[in-house]
Length: 349
View (cartoon, rainbow, N blue to C red):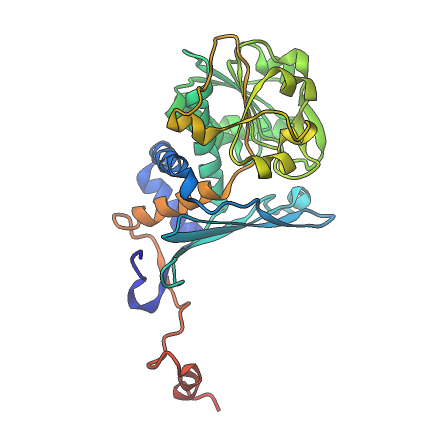
């Protein structure tokens, strides 16, 4: 049983308070500690209930639920993906989530997860890259400079030690914004006119585009030997970023194959194409990168255990950084069987 909420209320982390948490902890420390929490849970992988996310697709986008449990706590995230939202000044992705006590079923935390998802996605990317990237790499190409881009750049700086990031987006204003946001953060930032230019000299290539279509962000001729590809953008059926020939040349690492085969780059391949589950690399069951010439590919779609790790991490932070509100979410009748009596005592006719 995990700690029940005090005062029969549930701690709620608003967007404002999530920003307060990140500000007090510091972005790079937050990303680093979050990646450590994610690694802890990957090491406990067999303990988790696992299922592909539950998705409701429409012509405008997708709404998904991402649940998991380690038998002690239960966590879920509600998240959407609506790429056309930006035309109306809205976020492409929004999210919220909750953590509950399995023994009682009571929620013990609710939080915004729009900002938190961007942080956990970047922390996961960098965690995986640290185990798969070539040695001594310091340059990353970042193709797609939307809402995720700064988080990815700072996570790779803090966790993998990159010191140069080469930016490209089909929208030059996105690249200008990203470059401006990264100014003064210890990275050499180079804005590039094409994806081809961005990948020149880069040992890590991150693709994080938003359009929900089969796109070709990277072509086979753009990927040389010995690089690590962090393919973040693919996250739903029918959306890909990499030319298929890249996949056949690379050693592919995934979070949870039943979900990635539906949503990731490997939806372009046959169901029997071999992939490696990343948790097995952390436990030492299988090797990560095996040679300097090998192309490694993290086919990232985001999985519920990573959100579970993020929920656990921010719950831990609240002990020393109490940036939360008390959410009156739990009915608390004097007699657990007398719920209607609560209404009567409140003066309901």
